[in-house]
Image 1 (cartoon, one colour):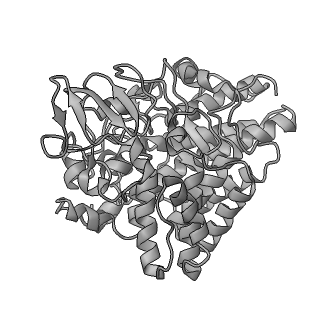
Image 2 (cartoon, rainbow, N blue to C red):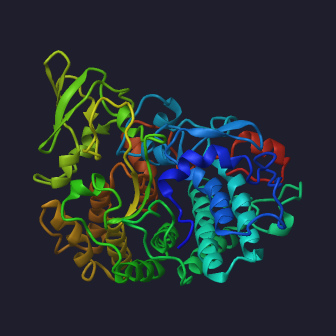
Image 3 (cartoon, rainbow, N blue to C red):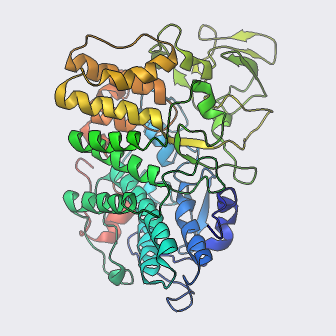
Length: 497
């Protein structure tokens, strides 16, 4: 494959390439302006690469960037700032605590909370229009089909991912996916749920059915690019979200049957070995675009502590996030997954600090290969992996037929963790057990909010930990107030706001 997509250079090139890719006038209007036209663009594979960089920018773990279309700085979806899609998917749950954002902590957010300077994932609606424009240009390109089909599948996967993220937080939005109307200034209403979901599903099915799209990129120079495995994973997530259990089971088993992915023998190695066989997708990090998550975890006086048998030495951090002890105590005795968590440490004064004398919660480090004081590290951020597939299939089977055929999937995960297999449970007991198992296995990876909502426990858990303002409306975030005002009655607010 010529002009290979060197993923570790993608993010450092974003700002230089971003300004030449289509941009939009505001969050509501998806009008596309470009210095490039159908006549002078997308004539080579290099042109495809340049266009896709703008889509990948949304998924960066870097802090964010100014969108040249409006001159507004937007936070990226997967950085460690508490305003992002990734962190709000954890900080609104029982797995991660912070006191930097009282509205998130107490469930007191409203339509005005997430308006303005790109503090909301809603701003990514503009990138759906960009993806649509790119897909249209690829389809019209004269580049040979072997190259065109692969890039088209990749662009559709990224558009579907953006649309799914928006759906997860806000429900169906008024994204523009008709290339013929991208330049229209008319504000359109929000899509019907079924229609919106249908677009996501079709994009992912198209990508999965594209022979030219590789199943995975693990261990290659294209690591960081969206493979077919990501398309399958997103489709599985969509079906789980909609509780379409039969489709979820079928999609998950199809992913398993590819043989492309497998559990790592050692849980810790998932997060210390780049592009290992368990990873379906991870966001690439390097010295130019580092991972800041770890800096948020360490108390100010931290000096050293053990994650399993690994001594983690470094200076203090910002201590913004911690794992509540109530969640930490969900791990069974001997669970090897706790080897990625620090439960006590020695401070700079030589004093041992634990839950009894000042450590407000465990340190969910997970990435135990860090070296030096940071504050940032060149460590890829794990997004989707094979263990999630196994647990999802187990859940989907249980919801249809009970747990008998589901044990084989969840017990693969538990066996690696060094804990006893599940057996002899009722359907309801298995449902509760799988939710707990997902928490222990996938903590710190951004899935907990979706899991709690799917199990009907999101609001219940918030109230249990003191967020007494939590109510059913909080299952979705509000459409930002500036969007509602600009929509002038065309765009409906989510119920309760």
